[in-house]
Length: 170
Image (cartoon, rainbow, N blue to C red; front, side, top):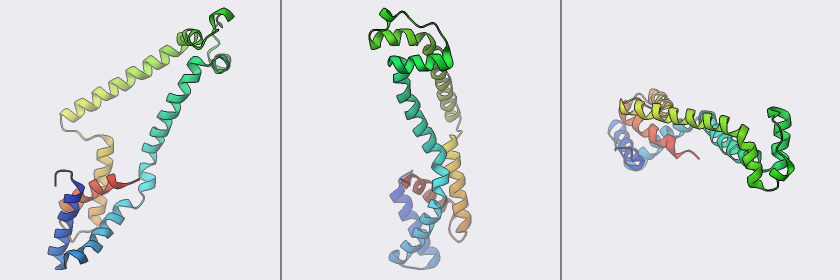
């Protein structure tokens, strides 16, 4: 099945047909039960991922006014940075504002970028030695729990199906 959800679906259907001695059409109901079991509690399971997605987009968007919008930059400077404000003639354009704010925006942005680069390198090296990512591990654990609920069928077939069914979540 090699990661192809349709192939894994058909494989599970054939397993249900063989074990339960039912037709292909009748097996679809049981495959639907397995799919439903895979989706149970999925909202909570994907919440951290959605939080990171939303948070990343929000922080990325907020960085623009923090760097280039004078009123926002001044307010942030007053509240958190307390750096000397550049002379008014050095803050006439958004590019000049960016040159001023970059003095205090560059260290955290640079450090965060370097940290993310290190995380990517670590994940890549873990992948090179056969380690699963956190999301793959969580997906596999959920699939194992689904297989526990359907012990009549071949465990590997159910797990394989449940792992790709997890990807069919909106």
